[in-house]
Amino acid sequence: MVARFEDGVADHLLELQAELATGSYRPGPYKHFTIEEPKRRLISAAPFRDRVVHHALCNLIEPLFESRFIPDSYANRLGKGTHRAVARCQAFSRSYPYVLRLDIVKHFPSIDHQILSDNLSRVVADGQTLALIGKILASGDGIADQDYRPPLFKGDDLLAWCRPRGLPIGNLTSQFWSNCHLHPLDLFVKRELGCKAYLRYVDDFALFADNKTTLGEWRQRIIERLAAMRLCVHESKAQVLPVRCGIPWLGFVVYPTHRRVKARKVVEATRCLGERYDAWRCGSISFGEFDASVQGWINHVRYADTWGLRTHVLKKFVWSKCSWAFNVN
Image (cartoon, rainbow, N blue to C red; front, side, top):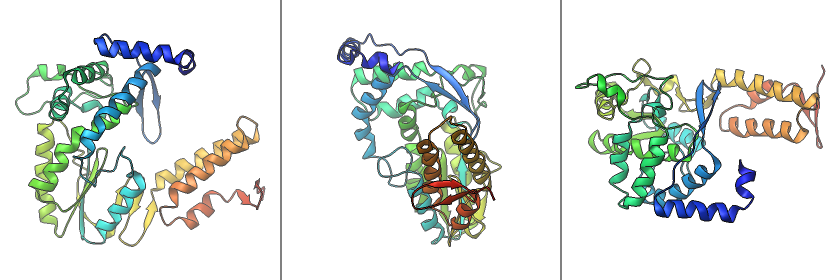
């Protein structure tokens, strides 16, 4: 697919430009596959020419939104990311005794197209750009209907289930629009609730305060605010806890004094690295590919207190100055 596009790339780009200029552009069909880790998800891959359009669109409109986003929104933004979100979470845990952590049920499948379109149109004024956004949105309508059926909200009738919804997991636009969609929630928490210590990564968010009562009140108001956006949280997980108990956050457990890697992540890493090692031993992958997996995992977990963990997981391997070697003992 990529090779076909790159073969005569100038002609393909001119064709795309003409389609976008005349409004005749139509997104192609997605290819779907399922991943099991870290949890079961349906991934939808757009045709390569559509991905070129997605990147061009995001390059055009992202600066309009970036200046509006709060500093403590960490997903899919330049200079942010997982590890900075973990560090910020720990900084808040050192200043406040209690935390409320919430996450949204089936975030991408549940995003309502009309509500998202309204949010985007408040910032994007160009009609041609909004029309393109509408086409990309429509291409993902109901893409995860088999995995998720939304609840009915107050005032709904059965026709509410027919509302267009869902963003394909895999599109660059989906990642960016997720931030746009939840930006009003960020403002609600910061301005209306008055929470001074708040951060969000995609649909995971955490609020910190000096007492449990305040966080309990904020919890209910956030649930009500999200319902107005046709979103739900996992209420059983949305508990107010002392920060000293540890905060599950983006694959880590964050304490005021240290960080740990979640036990489930350790099990996954041990299995995955073992499979990669076996693949290298039997010649299915190169040593460089195997080493990249090891170094990638080390680079991730080094943001926690994991010297002992790294020794444990990598105990099959012995590092010499020049190479890795298997320790048969």
